[in-house]
Image 1 (tube, rainbow, N blue to C red):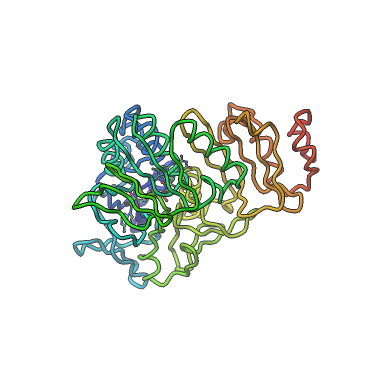
Image 2 (cartoon, protein in one colour; image 1 turned 90 degrees about the vertical axis):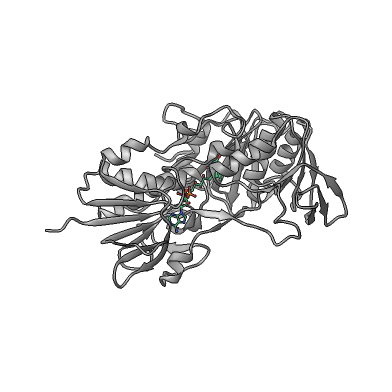
Length: 415
Ligand SMILES: Cc1cc2nc3c(=O)[nH]c(=O)nc-3n(C[C@H](O)[C@H](O)[C@H](O)COP(=O)(O)OP(=O)(O)OC[C@H]3O[C@@H](n4cnc5c(N)ncnc54)[C@H](O)[C@@H]3O)c2cc1C
């Protein structure tokens, strides 16, 4: 009997984790992992943090050592870009024409940086960040005393701003919102983070946007919509990603804000699964959502592999993520696209607090600034972890008790 052939398109965090999971679970068929990049799967979070600052090595960011793939008979193809999926013939076509047959296919191509259609975006020195090569380019430009403009104060922009300041670069940051990360965390928390950046010497231009990047060949200055002109040596643009859905969309998969998958990571195409940044998944607690965070790519990659093996249950991971900026630790558990009440435990001024995002007194998400512990860390019995059952079980809460330091968060759980 012919061995089953599982192919994975996208050798990033979700794809690499899925390939390794297939073997851990005893799958004995063929596993092919196709990756457009020239590296084995790696973690991107350090690219804007320790790796960018030269404190961490790239080798330590690999999902698994390169030899692990060969030793587990995972056919890792680097520099192999898939250009077409033929669902009728069950084939993946690569750039160059080679075709790979599959019995089951997992698609995990992540996203690419959004490139705003702004005059001068093509100038040398206008940089973006997704890959290790792009991190290297920013690092090379980031010499002490130089001036940079960061465009967009979401997670990538905020982290790059912090790292550049730590490297001694002068930073002006431009954001369309009233405060950094206000869209995700709310204005009150955004204002606290704005204060952190200000204390580190960042000039923050709020509710403004770039009208043009200017310079002859190389960027020399940025002109904003509000009329500011900022001289600079380089620019980092971090205004979000576009999920790489083209392969699946051309193959006819159902799309909506990414590729639609069910709670088993199945697309609408037979035998085709998706996970990671591209997957708009059905979640038993949160409903439909697409998540662009490390913990999701790792957990969903694993869950998709289990589904391919017809082993797993629904993907019901309660989402979480983190960010590090300067010496500030940000941790988030749950998912709140909107909320009707925001309750704090601890003071905003102390920069050590929990923020609870509620809808009709049901906790949607909790955010901890320098407080609450890592909800992923089993060693830490932190406050965020105590909130997990509250979010998962949709328990109606008394908000005043959430704010009350004397009320134990784990005492809310109903036995
Ligand atoms: C600088 C940076 C910092 C981050 N920091 C954090 C953080 O602090 N916390 C957090 O929770 N998250 C963070 N993230 C987000 C996190 O890294 C992503 O959510 C995660 O990488 C998504 O994994 P993925 O496998 O879906 O996609 P990716 O990691 O992007 O992997 C997809 C891979 O598929 C390849 N590919 C694309 N198209 C094809 C094709 N046609 N054929 C073959 N291969 C293809 C790509 O080249 C890529 O290698 C950060 C991201 C970046 C860029």
